[in-house]
Image (cartoon, rainbow, N blue to C red; front, side):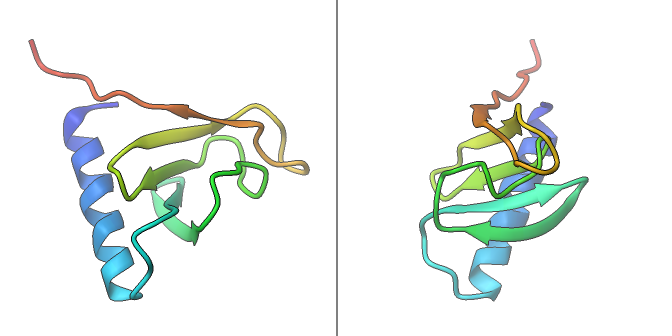
Length: 84
């Protein structure tokens, strides 16, 4: 993921938390470029594969595996691309 994209996700997620007075735990979940919710748990089963989670720590992960009915199987950490 490009560093600029990652920065935008983190910034928008932080703003989402603040606007809704959410706790500084859990993750803001994105799907197809739109924030679709917040989760206090780290379990991926409630989210579709391909969703992006942005944690309060700044970590970003993609929900992978599974299917549309059962949800994702795991979160895979995403690293940002750094320009050389």
